[in-house]
Image 1 (cartoon, rainbow, N blue to C red):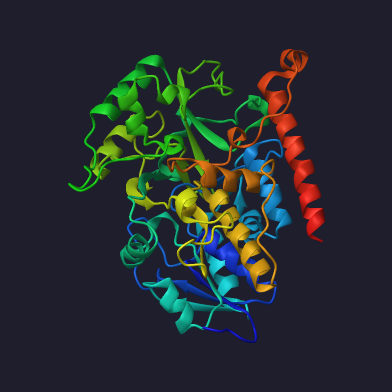
Image 2 (tube, rainbow, N blue to C red):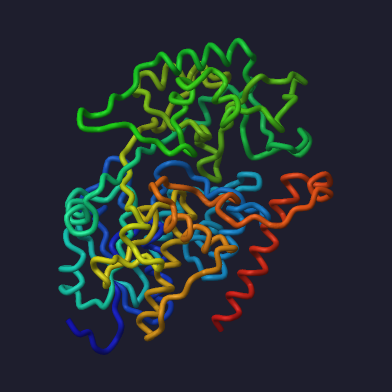
Amino acid sequence: MQISGQPRVLVIGAGLAGSDAAMYLARRDVDVILLESKTVRLNPAQKNPNFGELVCTNSLKSLDPYSAHGLLKAEMKAFDSFILEVAERNAVPAGDALAVDRDKFAAEITEKLRAHPRITVVDREAHDPEALRIEYGCQYVIVATGPLTTKTLEDWILREISSDDFYFYDAIAPVVDADTLDLSKMYFKDRHKSMEEGGDYLNAPMTKEQYYAFVDELARAEKVPPKTFEDWKFFESCLPIDLMAERGPDTARFSCMKPVGLEPDINGKWPFAVVQLRKENLLGSAYNLVGFQTRLTYKEQVRVFRMIPGLEEASFIHLGSCHRNSFLNARKLLDFDLRSKAHPAIYFAGQITGVEGYTESASMGLYVAFQVLRRIGGEEPLRFPVETAFGALVNYIMTIEKPCPSNINFGLLPSVPFTREQKRAGGKKLKKELVARRAQEVFQSFQSSLR
């Protein structure tokens, strides 16, 4: 089908990737048809019909410019990220991280997208992207349906794009009512900061006896079983807390429950382990349990999590759950600009491509929108330097032999020359800083070449 006149792109899915892609194109005078099925039917992990809903945690990770997540955010800002703009306007205290009031965040994303003159929102479930492209008179389609793609669209992908099994499981952490916490057993402190500086994280310290009793109950507690046709496959970077307990009694203590940088507590005692809670909103009326994704049944969550000091009488605003996530084998099925090899007018963006995390998902929406805009303008797609955060993410999903969703991390970026003297002087911290500085320089040079 020949498209003439004003360029038009169909974006399927108004999550983080779809929202950033839609706004990027609309701001550059491309008409966007934004298809979203939430108002038709919510999937099991969704709670409300707003776009850009954060279903797991309310944290978009570190703002430190010398961290991998900080690098990615800086590059996203340079590409005019709508998602980061809204996140910053709806931020809640979270130390060096960017966390948001998830309800206000999603509400603003929805309002801005629906109000944009270049964006037409269609409340409809997608079934066949190619047929929808023709129906709406679009040149290209961006499928940004995330890891919780609807069954009808998943069936089309399996039939037309991939016959492979493409799924992992993810889990959601519970949220508690702040008024039901016993603050006399808890204290505010961020990692590696003094007690006098206070902090945005609420900490529940545990003694050795309390910790081992807790993880023992986590391991023994009743879990929601997988369906007969399912096999649990989890991200190593987002394991359920109960699975950590099953792997070994000290696993959680060296992960989300590590006491590093948090001792001593307000009474001068050194905790054996710590549970951290982070504000859900600016009012501080609700807190989520950091890193406490879980497979436990609702009844067992209440019983076991009330063993945490300060949570003995806790009221849970919502409890954790586990859900299936779908991912493509990008290396096998997509070109480097994330265009389908089988259907050249169709692109995939966000978590479905094999990245993991909120900002990672949104960044891939920006990346694909950038490449689509080049196609519309008659230009060839452009490879991003692998030394940059964008380039490293794309390189990872396009080269990993067996799909394994990943967050942005320094392991994805090429290493830098590191002398023995530098290692003695600064160790891993200095090495990361050198990688970060190189990434910043390479990205600035790359961005300048686009002007």
